[in-house]
Length: 424
Ligand SMILES: Cc1ncc(COP(=O)(O)O)c(C=O)c1O
Picture 1 (spheres, protein in one colour):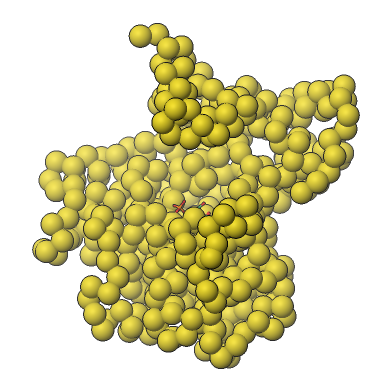
Picture 2 (cartoon, protein in one colour):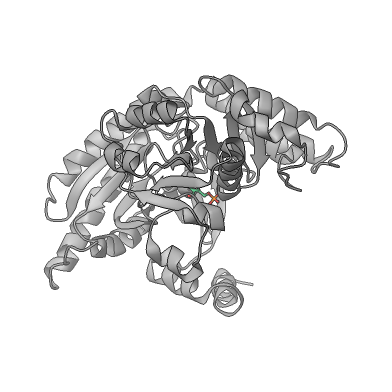
């Protein structure tokens, strides 16, 4: 069978049996081929065209595609016992929980291992309610914590929420970055505040100075739990192990996923202090998951954490992020009508356009130039750049060239049409 037939067959399967509107969106965005193989920062489509992966599976591929040590660990485990019997002690699970206690800041100690980000958030929310005996959860507008009911209740963007209402009760939203607004919503029934230290899907939004420290202080004074969702920011992405370390704060519950599986296995985790975890100690089966903590995923995570440590990926993300952001800013100077702002921390970078229409052209143009990027889910005006943390300077330079070339093409395209209207 030739490649074109395989491509058409798969697109047709999406259209007929999976998700017709996604099939249309991918085609319109210029991604009408099949992903086929990957290695390091490079993904190849079925026709052999190479792309530098600057989307990185929304941050999943911190170690690049198929990192050898993670692949080896998973292969070893595959030949022994891939999934858990659930009755014996599971060594990779125990090892991973110990490792997470070692690398997480402050007195974070106990972990529950789940299978995805949203599942880990669900667990964190349950733990917060159980541990405090209260029900109200305060979250930020424009946040993204996942798409299951609890996580969605704590997230922004109505178009993802409204069709599923009523969502969970006692979830209250406040603008991200406004500590006073947040404090005004606290009641005697407030269990927890859940925040991303840097909003990812909200458009790579950094917190204002001292915001997170203020929130930590409020939580301490009012005996409210702070849940930090570091599913996207955690594990070296922003230039430290965890983004909260830039702000010198420690949450009561930390949520991880994405990069934790080393780009090979799906996994999520929430890690809490001994005090918070007391509630869970009352019943060993109070929160469980059949697949959560499976040996394959835990071995992948252990190997991934080892690689992050050995290769000092936090430091690399910091240095390369500074270089990347400064060069993107230089390139953007020539396009003030199209680019509002370049911002980010480490290798979590956002390009805010003056109109989402530009993104609709820029993303496929960059794919043509061999670079994968995407917009952020709650803010289509922002294109996010989250490459593997192993990206080399010469690869960053190729991305920068593709960016400048694509910007020029998009500018020419729009100069022949009506100017794109700035909208949100
Ligand atoms: C901050 C944050 N939390 C939670 C999630 C949900 O993770 P998952 O898609 O694995 O359920 C995401 C996914 O993008 C995220 O960015």
